[in-house]
Image (cartoon, rainbow, N blue to C red; front, top):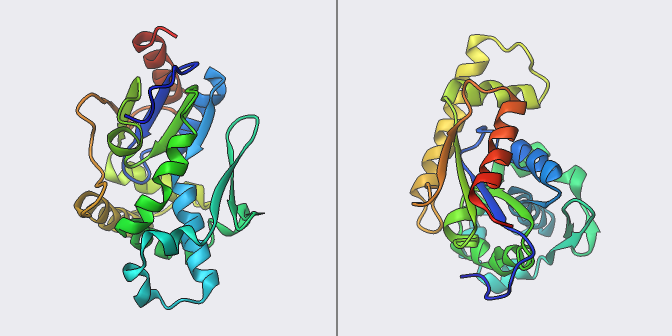
Length: 232
């Protein structure tokens, strides 16, 4: 349990594989509900950015302990609608989606000490509730007592199309889709097979298949679920 403190509203978690739409859906649902949004993936990207900037050889990352990861000074600053990720007190949004960070973030997120180093920080965001948090272990590890847990899934090819669209490929050919799908499949195996906080559906989560849904439909599905499952 993350806290015995009486929350002002529910915690809503959205977990799922890469490309399932959880981050964009969580952000939009949070706005509609008047909640804050926590993008946990941005924290792991921040850790990765910090490691790359430190100059420490990649082969040494897996041996780092929790204190070494904490020394990178990853923090969250509360904003009107969510949280601003800081690295050593600096905003680094423009650095978090660079190819170098994207290439290494999965490996960093698979290191047990990296996940442990961020656990308390993430849980603090939910003390008062009224939070929509997305990631891969929000409902199973970070907020196991969340009032609403959603597990998003989507067809692999559909997820590949979405990822390509995010980088400006609005009409990708079959080769590009297949290549992206292969990369996502590799990421799925890494996420589901890691030793700590593997990607999996919480026992009390509601599964939402977004394959055939328009973005507006999947956001509304989450909002409707919150209304149905909570008494806040």
